Image 1: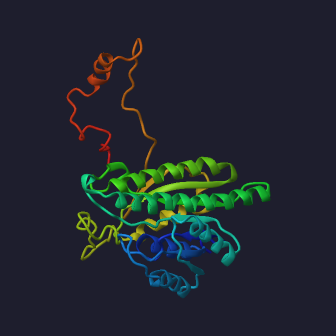
Image 2: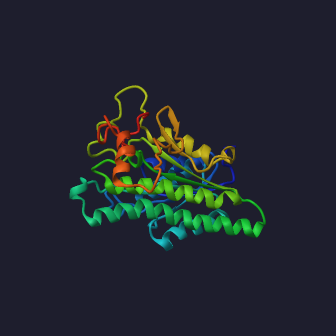
Image 3: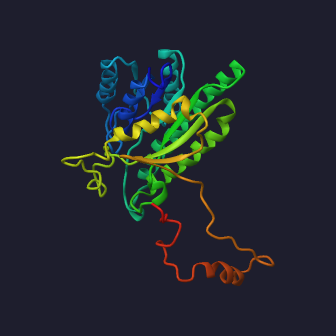
Amino acid sequence: MGVLEGKVAVVTGAGRGLGRAHAIALAKEGARVVVNDFGVSADGQGRDESAGRGVVEEIKAFGGEAVTHFGDVADWNDSKGMIETAVKAFGDFHILVSNAGFLRDKMFFSMSEADFDAVIRVHLKGHFCGMRHAAEYLRNKAKADGGQVYGRLLSTASEAALFFDPGQPNYSAAKAGIIAVTNSAAQALIRVGVTANTFMPRARTAMTSTGPSAQFFQKPETGFDAFDPAHTSPLVCWLASPAAANVSGNVFIVWGKEITVLGPPTKAATYHATEAWSVAEVGKHVGRHFEGKLPIKDSFIMPNNF
C-alpha cells in the first residue's frame, strides 16, 4: 500500500522530464493519474501525443492506473477538462501537480512581446487555470459534504523567481507569479482542508538541456546523478500525502539529496521621518543604508544564503 492509495492525481506536462517522474512516482504510491501533456517542444512548438501515451503505458506496466489528457493547460476549458477527466475516469479528484511549461529565452532588451506573452501564458496562466478549476471542484465537494475534503495543489516554480536572470525576464516573472498565485490558493482553501505549496526543482529536463545552463545539468559519467528528475518526486509525493496536512503556503527547493525550505521574506531596514518625507530626508535616512554597498551585488537580487 502506497501513501496515496485511493487518491486521484492530475499531473500537467507529464509526458517528459519532471512531469513524467512525478506521474510515475505518484502512481507507484497508489494514486490513479491523469497524464496531461500538450506534446510541445521545449520552446512550445509542435504537437506530439506519443510521450503522454508512453507514460500511461509505463504506469500500466507496473500495475498502476492512468489515462491521458492532451489539453492546453492555459486554455480555460481544456484545464477544466483535466479535472473532469479525472472524475470521469476515476470517480474523484484530489491532487494537482502543475508542471507544464516551455522557454523562450532572450536578453531583456531583445525579447519580443510574443515571447514574453507565450511564457507568461503557459506557466502563470497555466498554473492559475488548473488550480482555479481544481479549487472550484474541491470547494463544491466540501460544501456538499458539509466539512473538509482531501486536496493538494502543488506548483512548479524555479529559482529564476529569486535570481531574476536577465535572459529570462518572462520565465522569472512567471515563476515568481506562480508562488504568489499558489499562496493565494493556500489561503483561500485552508478552511476546506486543501493545501497548496510550491517547489523549485533543480533537474535535467528538456528546458535545462540547452542554453547556458546545460553544462551545469550534465549527467555524470559515474556516481550519483544529482539532477535526475526522479530525485524531486519524493517531495511531491510527500506533500500530496496525508502526512503533509499541516503544510501549506510554503516554498521548497529540491534536487539530488537536498531539500531546502524557504522562510518568509524579511525586512532589511525600516526608516521613519519626523514629518512627511522630503527628498532630502529620504537621502538622509535611506541613502545612508546604501553607503558602501554595490549595485546588484548587495541588492535584493542576489540572496546571500544560497
